[in-house]
Length: 213
DNA sequence: TGGGCGATTGGCT
DNA sequence: GCCAATCGCCCAC
Image (tube, chains in turn brown, red, green):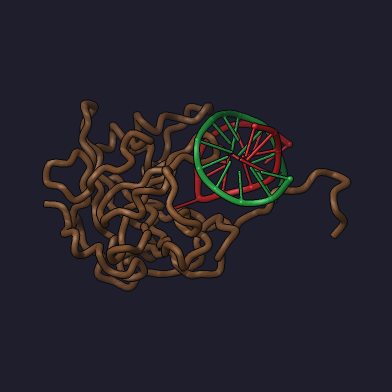
């Protein structure tokens, strides 16, 4: 059984760390892959300049404005998908980004989906879902899964109790954000090898001859 | 309506 | 560590 929807209808800063250790499980014609969540980030709606919902509802971010427990998938950098779960009390367009996890079922299918680099070296297991875009590839998530219900018994994509994480999560700044980069709203399981490396936002270099500093 | 830039990744120096 | 890939969103014009 998936987790209960009421458990996600709380402030997103409470929900996010509580997702650590839970399992995302997806079944398709190809088979099943399940991932134990090891790293997440909270996005707190209109109070959060780093959130896609900060400037109000659009076609892209509509799922964040709906009820908790639904998949918000967005496309970025012209090639990657990232997945969130909508969360928060009614009226709060909040979400939690799944940043990394450990494959706990369907290792072979996850490896196949992730492929091999040009060098042909196999991808280490810990890297299969290490990073938000890699996690989506491992689970086979793309634009078509946007809006899926993660908490339905009959859904092909479910959020399950999994192996609870009972310790204290570590917290730190969110990865790659320009706005509100100081808020420590990233949560991860201490010492887990699948946690993604932290990268601060790097402003794009302006063209040569542009404004002096 | 045009264009800058992003909740990233992998390959190369 | 540096940088290209690649496209759709969204705001400024």
